[in-house]
Image 1 (cartoon, rainbow, N blue to C red):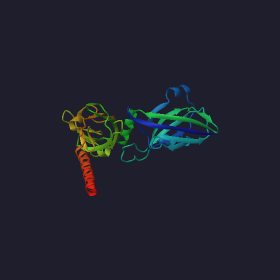
Image 2 (image 1 turned 135 degrees about the vertical axis):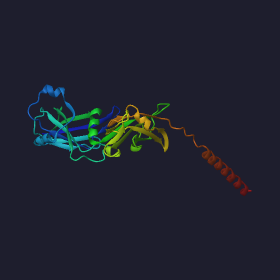
Image 3 (image 1 turned 90 degrees about the vertical axis):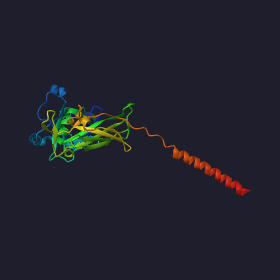
Image 4 (image 1 turned 30 degrees about the horizontal axis):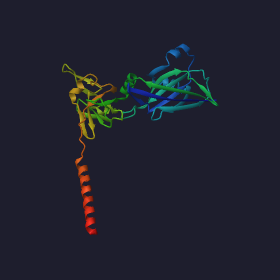
Length: 295
């Protein structure tokens, strides 16, 4: 008898946007000692609590199976029967990087997600179970901070009609030096995602001015945005916009909804009507010429 565990693990950037844990590895461990059923029922998820390297090495002998998550955060794990299906399993995630990070960190970071008993169903010669989890945005933001990577998501809408603007380009800028941090494009629903890393700032950290005139150190930029539609600027903020709430020291997972006002572009009918008129005139001349020859 064998076991097959399938599932998906993703993370929230904001309430409206999710990203898969694409560059991750899932590890399943055999349990260590007895577990209280009531404790398991109350606390299935641990929200990716990082495990020190000493603990990771200490439980290496209990490793049951491991596999990489694909580009959509899906995984598939299988192993031969080596424990009772009523026993709990420990589920850990290891990360070498996150979307938007320029470089992978030295050595992977391992996080404990859950200790639980899968709901196994027997299918011929194996037991099947599924597992899915979405990392909360607040926790994912803290993890992204450790990797020095930001994810910004939101919606771009027409400032007058509220209509979602599709296929427009969104650019984020650092208010300290007006440097482009990252860009993304809206989809059919007007939603966009963009990423940037700590290396895009001034060095690994940045300097900002505090209100009383003193200087302080921050590892997160103040941000403003520009939006372009087919090469035309439809939203152009400046550095003063970055002083507003939600833009100062932007969170590593941030939702930024934007309103733009695209200029109406009149249809160019002149050239088309001219072509039609020319075609009709040419047709008339051709018919007149044919009649003249016939005579």
